[in-house]
Image (cartoon, rainbow, N blue to C red):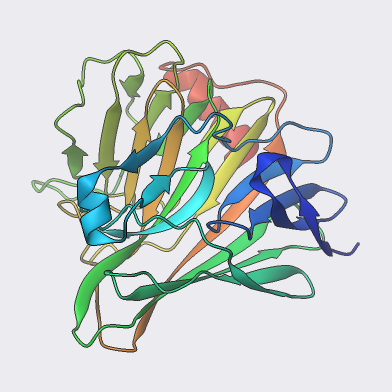
Length: 311
């Protein structure tokens, strides 16, 4: 059982590095980005969103002034690395240039150009396990400025429409003290039918007919989150420090949805990154086929799904 790594064109994205084994395949762009734009079990559909119509992009005078004339940020789809706290336009860097890459035995390293104005540079290393669909993603940022910056690495995976996300609730017994933080964005309506709060799990459903956007964050002490769709479940695991300093009031997991997408967003701790220093955030991905889907808002159904496929 071996991993094959090759360079191929993929859809409208141009040249990509393809990693595959007998279980799964992963494509990461190198003409732009980088973005992981395709992650699927063999014989199954892509779990990641592809912005074929360029429906999500940011541009304008502030982008021209901050970066360069004609600067335009594209979501592209799939997975991207950002830094938190979020700031417009700084966060939305127009990463539309070719990416340097190095092929590894079971994956590849991707190094986009240094970011103008932000004075940082990313480095992403994807490796595919030889005996499963499991992917390890090491995300790094280097501070190229002369000043120390305080940032958290922020891994954002843009999932395709019509799935159901499962977020485990914090369960630690803290006595008379609160055991969880819920960050709510100004445009989020907690009576929205897309979000359901259960005793053990939160579910968020992507709805292509939704008229508004929705985002929340939580202190995810379990260190995992999952998205069920297309007869499969995508799971992300990452390390969480319960005493760590996290952005947005102390949340290590954020999630956002619109009528097009649902984003699974994991956050590392805030770091003081010194000049020429680096910080790192690691995610572990997995894909499994499923025989039934969790019922949004039905706690017993979600619990059965978790015990069957995510335990």
